[in-house]
Length: 489
Image (cartoon, rainbow, N blue to C red):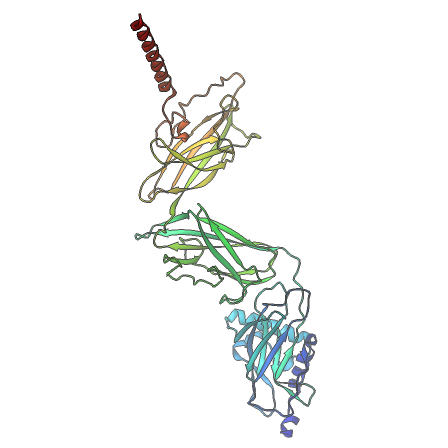
């Protein structure tokens, strides 16, 4: 054995020394007096204190160098990493160690090599890689963390502590750096769709339902990002909801839909949810192929990702969603203009010949269009009434409104026609204009004419009818009184 010791290559001693001094991270442990080529080892990583949360920081381990078959203990770079240009025998400084590690990381990503092991630190910042064969290893922080960042580095198992003793169970304490104070945010938008038996896809909206998304640091969705990695998306009368992750550190993240406990749901797989509803979750809108759930936050700014649930049976308490576009024109003396006023429109769903219910009040854009999601009845036509109102949905007083309003009316939508439009026109009144507003020009898109705004109460009986009834009743009372007096004489 002494002969073997005298034949160690100088390059291996250099590597061992580099690993030992790399940021002062290797801590001596119990030494082994003799070398055993069959003995396994381990790497225990302990994060230093940055004043941040040291728990749940993920690290990946890659075996990048094999033990050479020779009379000396040295390592040879794996052939699959040769294009990195790294020579394990020529690393002569701590800086060279880090630079070589970064080159290897680049090649690993380019080639698509998977990590041998990925572990996360416990609450005190300790991660252990046990039962390691003798080799050269690359350790890489595999996900972003509020703790900070740690540069990749190389570790040999075993290594020579002082030219005399072998260390198989290696302990490292890499120096971390706090995250940059740069604002990075990720907005997650979730959409709901229904695909019928013929392959037609529709946006759908629940009366009340909730879904969850989770942000993870690893591709398999086992290492959550921080404690608030889970976001609840509450849907109530809408087919789309969003949530935002703020102040994200630089790094690569993975987004999953999860259950309420944070367990990821598989993408692109037809399955049943907890209510037995068949669906599939995809990245992107429901009418496109699924994309990647990986998000790289590299520079400051905002990023976004969309995921969708496609249901294969319309769930109970869900409605098909249509899109109603309302264009707002403002004119003065026949020319397009803008004013300081804010305009609103109320959208009502017609429920019978005499009744309707308010769907929403929307703020309009002058000389522009807004699109309003509206609920449709499955298998039949749905009629919507659009009127200009104030922001609370109250009817406008034509005597005190500075504009003539035209274009109010109805739009009919269905599953065969899920989009529709209407144009509201406001014309600035001249001083000499009569304040009396007619309703002759309030035509809907179907060609019918809207005669009254009283439909919202459910009573569309003309007021003249009530006056006639009152007059007849009065005459009847007078007749009865007169007749009674005549009979008493």
